[in-house]
Image (cartoon, rainbow, N blue to C red; front, side, top):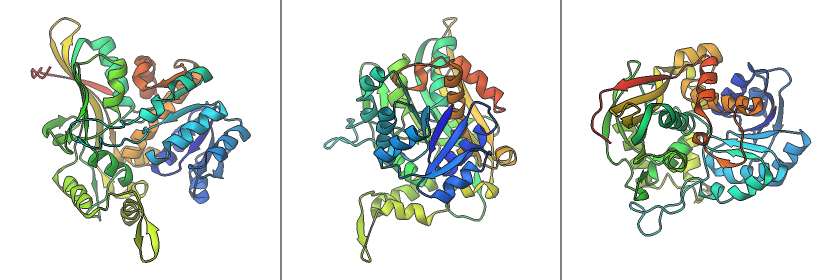
Length: 404
């Protein structure tokens, strides 16, 4: 399978390093910064590096055709989803991403009603993808991605009825030498944390709340322990209800008071804005400036310690008719991912899932046409192959708490 990997940042580089160990993958690595593409392509002899502006649909389509690519793997931030999505459709290739098209809050009631939701622009083109016979597999990182696979697995094998499918993300990662150093793209983190969070409820549909709503303490496994989690806008809440029956779907992120405080300050100062402002005669995006001032998450691995955990907490009625509560999860130790792949834990955990998905597509174990989320496809082959990659998932039974 020939893959055009667009984006050679932390996640893209980790993707190349993981794919380099699998026989099915042949990569063409594209980035706006050719040197960065070359560094990622160095993961394996034979991988090629090219320069590409991800905003240029025609250039992307031409590149896919020139290199006879089977699929476009989008490892850029969400700003570039739609031009890459359309370019893959025009070229007649499959398409995968790890974050979906951007949302836009409701103009009058942003903290109660949805406006344009995450992924709406992509799902609006579903019929075109179906007619093409190609698969656009959206949201196939770790969250969204593996978390959605967990939801489908729970529905298929563990539960008769799901009360809540709640994605819960937490970590005990620390970065030495920095007072503030996000371990993932700050551009994306600002986008998802400061937008109104979306919740789905049976009979009500999708609705929004103010940012950082409904705080709860969730106890994470592997020694991470209790972490305060809050509602955050995330793709799972838009994807899971399309294919998995549940009474409620949520996403909560273990941010911590300090991180929330920084994000709130950025918002108060207008530094979360993406539209350019005049600064010393130059037009710059405040959010891009913030990102430029912070360390590149891909470079923090040597300074990081600890573990990161992604998972889906499911409550409801088990297959035996009794109340059940399970946390399906995946933990990565930064020391392991750095020693094994030279990539820090958060970006590695994100990148491994699309590699697994592409191997399943290449083998025929996963197939389809149209715009599909991970929960639209059978979960067992994915979870089995993820374990084969040396990074097993786990299921933790918990005492039912009555939250159904």
